[in-house]
Image (tube, rainbow, N blue to C red):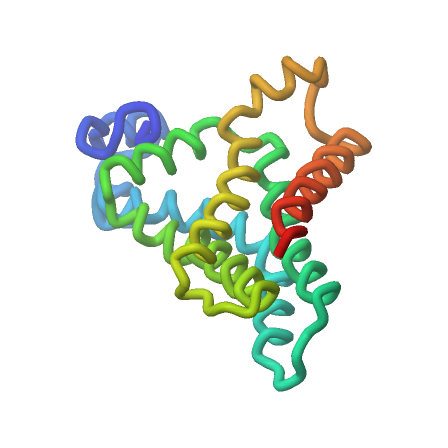
Length: 197
């Protein structure tokens, strides 16, 4: 409902009715509409973290080390960050999640702040840090950040345009060999974008 109607137009009374719970129970457990909105964001974050956190922890560990990493090692780290992200974008998630994120973003809500800080910002930061090391620059360099955002935006398009991509490819879904082909193709494009540097 938050995704379809937006935060302001969604009432706790309507949510309680649709969830078949009493309004006082909703208030008791979530403290009201803002708490419920944040709980929705936290629920999505938990799913994304389950996919991304192992790779993110490994990347942070290796980037924090004293030994310089080779280009091949840095590219492998970048792949470790992006592959779970691509898998998450390609696999079927409720459309309401996409709507929720888009609405939270356009409304500038507290839920969007949490989603950005704990998911998008983390992926962007790790990607920028790896690209910066690949190019012997700093992650704060605007060009590095734009490159990181371009790569992430390219992979996020898989989620936003999922129905179009599937129909154009004539595929029922992104799974098995189809998912592997998608990941390989996106990865080749990412490598090509970094090849001249």
